[in-house]
Amino acid sequence: MKSTLLLLWVIIAMTVTSQSKVTKQPFGKTEDGTPVELYTLQDGKLTVRIMTYGGIVVSLEVPDRDGKPADVVLGFDSLDGYIKTGNKPYMGAIIGRFANRIAGGTFQLNGKTFHVPRNDGDNALHGGLIGFNKKVWEAREINNGVELTYVSKNGEQGFPGTLTTTVRYTVSGNELRIEYSATTDADTVLNLTNHSYFNLKGQGNGNILDHQMKINAHRFTPTNANLIPTGELAPVAGTPFDFLKSTVIGLRIDADNQQLKLAHGYDHNWVLDGDGRKVEVAAEAYEPTTGRVLEVLTDQPGIQFYTGNFLDGTITGKGGKVYNKRDAFCLETQHFPDSPNHPEFPTTKLRPGETFHSVTTFRFSAR
Image (cartoon, rainbow, N blue to C red):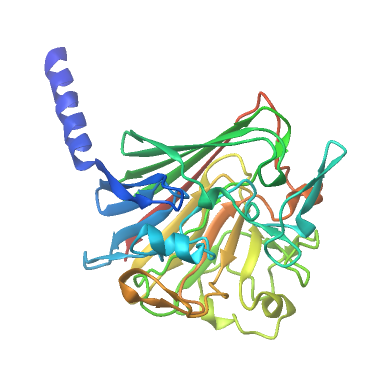
């Protein structure tokens, strides 16, 4: 009886494993000749392609309510597309060392002042001039996915400490899971995210204003004119930032609201209602014509909802599609922007002997 049960479990395990497939292929070289690889992850209904340059999600194919797949993330057909444009929109990339903005490119840690190159007006954005999105990561195949590792040396882009970061992308059924971990040899600050641009109609198939969005957050962090948080945790009630119920994105995006005017749409951090210790649903997007649904689950305290306000038609992406304003949205799980300069925010400090660990899952379905 025991042997029969054991054999049954082996057969089940082999069946589950056989549905999952990981392959890799060359994807060109950087300007200095460093080879870049492309990993294709397939399981269930999802096909995801990740490249070692920037840890970028190059494509993500998801079926609609009729089972027809489409690529729902913006990007380029080749490595050259990312390199020649500098991938200024950060499409699909791993962002670090510090996602989002640092005011003046300056922060203090343990009584010392550190400077990150300013690349967004007076701010440092997404880790400075050469962030993790422009690095070639070491890769190895793992069960259902790929593990990427990058060692950022002490002083890189002005950040203290040598930081070792590992990001695991895995696909299972209808989920793309991103698991982040990092260690340091000196006190530092850290904020990691993925910067995929989504359009659930399919990339390049028009704007996202008719998508419906739900964000599980009663508060958000208003910004000043430089898009730096003021420090206030403002209630969303009675404002265009209330997405506690599923709401059409375009309904209030051009409302007479100072915060929307400053950002040219939505480009703000929502303070998630979760406790920041367990993975919970943070947001849900729904596209009515295809029926595609995207749920974002995370253990992070915040999520940046960005509506592609600075896409301006100058970028031609996959399949010759031109990317215009509001042709995609981002849901970047994160700590709050400019946290090192706001001690009242959840800390982004990482010390030697500690391990930063976080999980974000993109779960797809259709209805």
